[in-house]
Length: 166
Image (tube, rainbow, N blue to C red):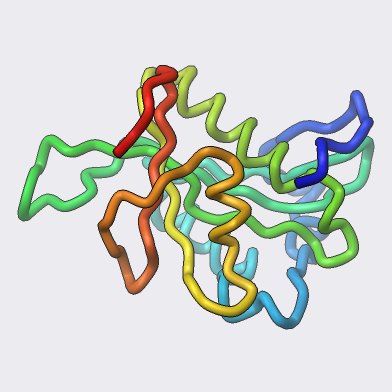
């Protein structure tokens, strides 16, 4: 996997009136479109779930290169365990023109750091399997499958306290 791009201007920033058009212009490769919802849907979900959504533009210098959205402290399965609060990566879109440069690795790492800062000891993510699946990407970042399935997607977890997950 490639290292993060050599830029001291790489950061996550809130989606604002000044950058929303650039954020909406983020589009993954056509062969990935079935694996991740478009940014427009993510922003609508962030609006509807404002209490748990953490949407951010991935910016290198003044250029929006991607979008990441975390979920913070949601009750994962209220019927089974109403105390099971989880945080993790909800959506990751790196623009097709900017893939393979380490921006996705940076975005996930920065979102996970925010989750850790808020006191969580684990971060979760879900991914589709099959052709062009992001599974190798997430496994390479240290996520491990939990054995759970959510919405037809495999669930992975990353320990934030340094202990291995099972």
